[in-house]
Image 1 (cartoon, rainbow, N blue to C red):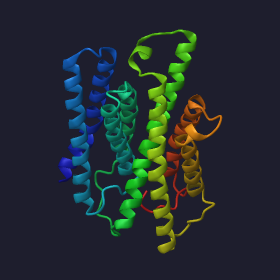
Image 2: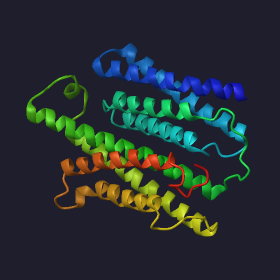
Image 3: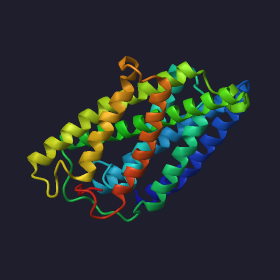
Image 4: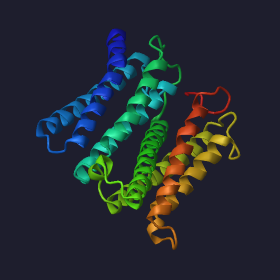
Amino acid sequence: MNALFQVLTVLLPPAYLLATFLHGMAFARPEARTTELLRKAVTATTIVLHLAWFVVHGERIQCFPIADTASSASAVVLATLCLQTVLARWMKNPGSGGIVLALLFLGQLFASAITDLRALPRTSPIDTFGIVHVTTSVVALAALVLSGVHGLLYLTLLRQMRLRHFGALFAGLPDLAVLARLTRGAALAGFLCLMIGMNVGIALAHRDHETGFAYRDAEVALTILLWLHFGAIAFSRWIRGFNARRASIAATVGLVVVLLSLVLLLVPGTTFHHTL
């Protein structure tokens, strides 16, 4: 079991790198049918390998597999890939796959690098509410990342149009209206999942009398602010003066904050979570 876990840990970054390369090829040559079929096959294989990694990891530690910093980061990577795959089917390949996959490759490379290959079984298994809290929080982070990435692409495409630079990026990306829908739609998914995960987590902290938990805690306050921030982006269509450009700027800023906030998981003493 441990040998299989080690093999999967080593294989995942190259799998994401290959998927990134094939998405880049499909972006540069959208007419290449063979590349498209191979890209889909590699993406599906990467998802299967990543799911297998979590199954094996759960068997190794005899607990829910999202149990530490490495597995949490890896879970966000997998959730983002799955959401991006759904978006690609929904929008008939929005053209952002290669950019998202490049970011996910770096994330999985980091997660594999810090994975403890000699981890011992956990002594305090997580209950059902804990699983809901962790899972919805992971999906929320993945959705917020996608919202920020597509917001950034919206701004990039808008700038190219204003400068009249009609290169490969302009040709490969969808129009501004589609990118705006992706930005708002992903923000809505993140807003809803974060609302569930955050409230379940707060309820668990009160129930278990979690040491160090407080609403003024940086982690809790930042989560609430991100929830409000992306909620405004999700419903920006109905907020006067909050047009697609401003929503995209807000999503890009939110992406930076989300990525920086993950540093909290790496600095000892900055989070009240015992599992991270």
